Image (cartoon, rainbow, N blue to C red; front, side, top):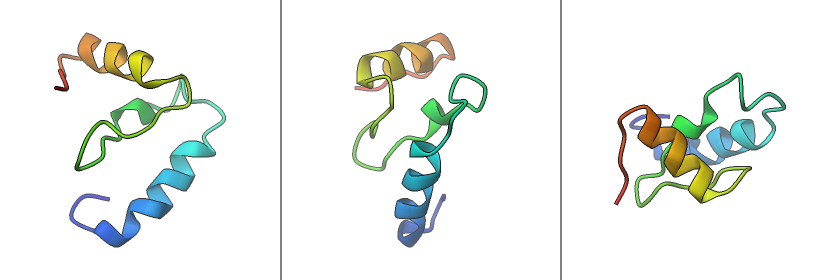
Amino acid sequence: AIGQPAAARAVGQAVGANPVAWLVPCHRVVAARGPGGYHWGLEVKRRLLALEGVHLS
């Protein structure tokens, strides 16, 4: 949750439990210190974000 660091664990659990990640865009959840994880791997997450115009360093 934006601006609520204590909610990071809850957000991570919700994203990890998402059975339809292709429908619910959980690849858009990005950690403060990097891209964070993704069920199908970091490279897939980076590609999906790049398709949407978001480029992570």
